[in-house]
Image (tube, rainbow, N blue to C red; front, top):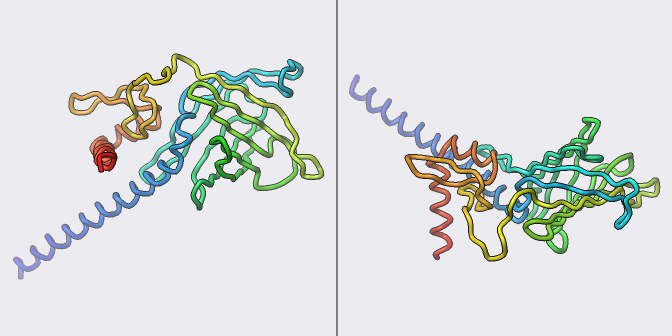
Length: 239
């Protein structure tokens, strides 16, 4: 009886271990899927210096602001978060994949600390067009993020009048801070997202690179899993 009980206990442990492993794989798959859906906007990651104008070519009402974009990753989710310093209309913006391909949702924190939900899709020229879920009201009601190239980004901010027509509040022209890759120049690649590798991380005496603090935290939490994912990506590319 004692031997039988031991065998049953061993079998139970194996089953539970398998269930835990399967559960971890399932949550990781959810994060990888969300990460892949956001990859086309991964170039946002980094620090940006912004110059804004209400009307192009006119200095009246102009202002300066800075933005810092990073991946926000957990075991089962992925998002891109922009934190804006001195922002006139936005304090931060958290972008996640929507339910359908090439659709997105966003949670904005406004300068007064209140939040506003947006949703939208990828538009022409790889622009991200996000519209407030509730029409009317003050402040920003539509956001258009347009990456021009690796070092330039446009952020168009629009309000909404009583007739529900969108009106221009201002446009921020962002320039990436620091030295960017020149066309055709190679450099370190983020082991997590395949973006621009700017931060070194180490594991078992070997150095890898990540693009932001979010990727660094995820790597340090489970480097073996991240390295396995990277190996899978490289294997898929060779097929």
